[in-house]
Figure 1 (cartoon, rainbow over the protein chains, first blue to last red):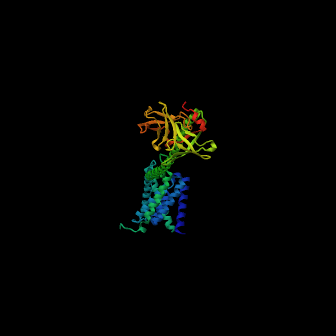
Figure 2: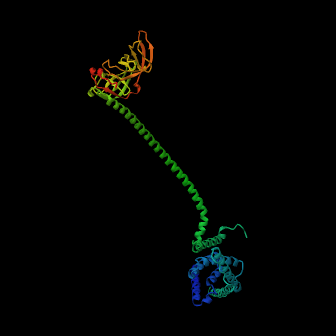
Figure 3: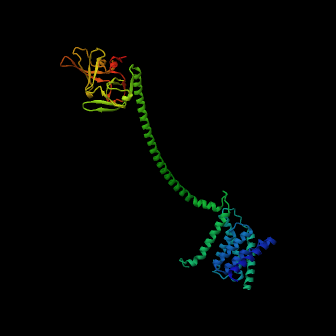
Amino acid sequence: MTPVWRGILALVLAAGAQVLLSRYFPAAGKMVDFYTVLVMYYAVSRRRVAVMVMGTTAGLVEDLLTHTVLGMNAFKKTLVGYVMGTLGSFFMLSQPLPRFGVLFLATVLEALTEAGLVLVLGQHVVLPSAGDLIRLGMGNGLVGILIYWMVSKLE
Amino acid sequence: MSMNRSFPERRPFFLLVLILASLLILMSHQVRTGQGNTLLEDSLLNVSSPLVKGASGGVGLLSGLWQGYVDLRGARGENLALKSNLERMEEVGRVGEEFRRENLRLRDLLELQRSLEIPSLAAAVVSLGVSSQARTALINRGSKDGVKRDMPVISRKGVVGRIIAVGSGMAKVQLLIDPNSGVAGIFQRSRGQGMVVGVGDRGCRMDYVSDLEDVAVGDVVVTSGLDEIYPKGVTVGVVFSVAEGDQLTKNIFIRPEVDFRHLEEVLVLLTSQEAAGHADLSQ
């Protein structure tokens, strides 16, 4: 399977998982963002162009499925993916703990990016509560470590 | 890290900027501002408004200049048309004035014709013949109109002359000022008689007036009818010079009442020679 098809498959799985979780377990759906986990996986393991392509695509799919402003999630995931990918190139991110840190940091950065973007667009900024943000960051970190381990086993 | 990195190394960054810019545009197209426009529309409006204003100002300026040029061209064309109209109207006015003057003259002539007991015929002067020895005029009436030789020709002011040649549609008039013309005249005031002869442009001279005759400058001379050509009482002219002659006569010069340089319409008196001398127009 080519990297493109693998990327598409990964995106379909992430989107499916997010939709199903949000629909049947809404509380759990707020504690994990499979799109971010996917993009950050690309950030720590792929080249920056691939990260940006995945960030944009995943973000647009998320925007379409969640009916938010088209481009909002794409923008923040592309930017954060690029930044984290650039930073990740300076560090060893093969271990679970650094990857947890990357996922947690990416979650926070995404929230801040979204707030900044909303501000730039002239809309009312509603920052997520710290608790929600921490829960989401930790959820992303834990789920991400699990998924990354599973993928490494598959590869 | 080198500051001069090559394009392939910077390509991801450019791609990032391109993607983010595209996404920003995409988002700004969806987000509406307080004015009800999308953010993209507002942004484009803000960016483009100075350009549009500048362009609009430039276009307005050019449009104004062009409109001015067009107006100027229009004004020039209008000016030419108005000038043409004015010239045409002036010509119409001149023609009208000519008709008005002719009408006045003809009315005068008509009044004179009505006042005469003798039948008369109006005629227009076609040309004036001026030579060193002769003062004549051609009129547009001839034998077919009943004009005959020696018929007197007068105007409202007085004696013009007599017919000396007749064609079918034209006749030649020997003017009063012709050196060969002769009219029997009489001073209206003193009733002294004499023979009025033409002296060309200087007017007329009255011969055969006795040295004893009471003649003064300003005396009016009328026809006496003795020449059997001109009816009696038609004005000939006014004495403007009286001097002692050398053979018991006076040297009297008369200024004709008729202006022969501006002669246009005349009356031909349709008289026979016998009747002419007995007619009296002094009334």
